[in-house]
Length: 402
Image 1 (cartoon, one colour):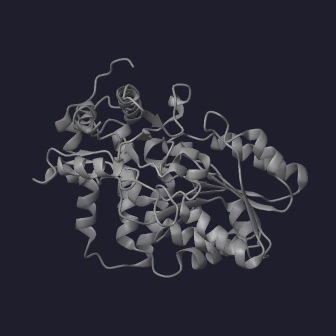
Image 2 (cartoon, one colour):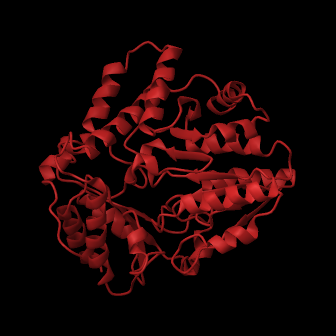
């Protein structure tokens, strides 16, 4: 696993509001797949502007700042109230001609599957899953075989909230664009980056439509999305980018945007940039830090009897972004998760819910047949503000229940 020098717990936790309260001073937070913790500076920025009068130009300025941070054009930026509403509105645009067909990552979130299934059921559409290879990565040959002129869009998880595996969005996008070029089609590549945005460099995001749930990226709930100008023109049947942008903003943003939510994600993104450039902690690399903590946690868990990881193994661990999901034969991990919370250790544990979902992923039990046995599962999600001490403390208490 190797050794690495990490910042002190005090250095890391001094940046995060959560750890400043008496209740959470010694807490271990390993649930950032559900909700990332907000930095102090983001909280201060929100407090400063909480009574700031809303003026439309403020949103324009924030869009421009956000676009610059992602090295994109401000005309490509859209802010909505949440990922669910964004996808629902996007699906309606995509299905304007009815009989639409979609290819879906088998580990897609219900925010994607539910609106697609609704449209398919009521308007004669069709959806099918892509295939994962033995390493949990989308099979490129399967994608190539599945593409045909009637396909409207391909939905990809940049990183699953179960397997934590980083998909090769660049290669997937290139395959789709090459198919479009060869066949005079316009299939869109739509990327859900909710789990990956905070764990990748800002320039690593591709696809025709890229979006993420802000609350998993150190900000208030909301949805940030980037839509290329070419995709905007296609969605709006127009070659005029100003007209396309106007139409999309009316449909997707649909009214007055939440100024405070937008402000929070812009300030959180600025925080990332400053963190990566050493303004908060000198000589600190959040990507290397997460990598070492992930390998350390994986090594400890791997030695646990009867423990089985979902989608992660020795061979593909390098593609994992610090999300480890597992079950243990004969152990009720939902109850274990509740017990851990009494010690200030926050994880996510679940069993099959009434809708047949695990972690809001409708197809999880089909991709991982072991879940059909109604196994309870537990997930830890490592972020840059975690420490080796956090992992040790989690594992110390976790072992009590084995």
